[in-house]
Image (tube, rainbow, N blue to C red; front, top):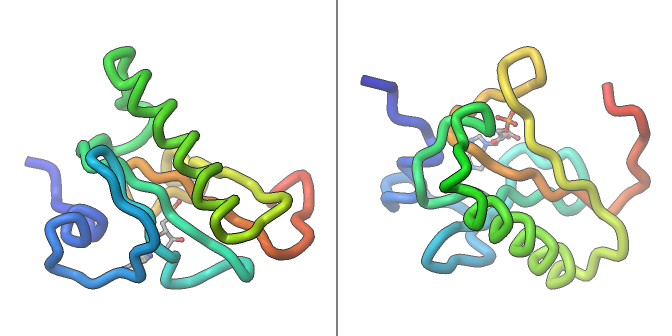
Length: 113
Ligand code: AMP
């Protein structure tokens, strides 16, 4: 059995979050350790550990998450932002429940570290 993630506990309402958007497929809340003035996390209600485990049947869900990420970025008043999905430990993934970071409100460097 895979270990339950903190995001799953947030989805179940066991751990509070600073929620800014919710619909039938996903939840958006503020990152607890923001890396920029705006740092949001978009997570699917479906338990997918990472993009590695996503399948073709998740295609419309993944599209939905991208569209929601743009919607909440607009709602936050961002003109520019970065949408990031860390996949795997070496890429910086620490929570194994698929999520999109929406980061903005300051100049962002490229390439990322
Ligand atoms: P990643 O490193 O890509 O897996 O991203 C996980 C993110 O979740 C990090 O940016 C953490 O700061 C954030 N995080 C972890 N626990 C919480 C929490 N309880 N509420 C909000 N954000 C969290």
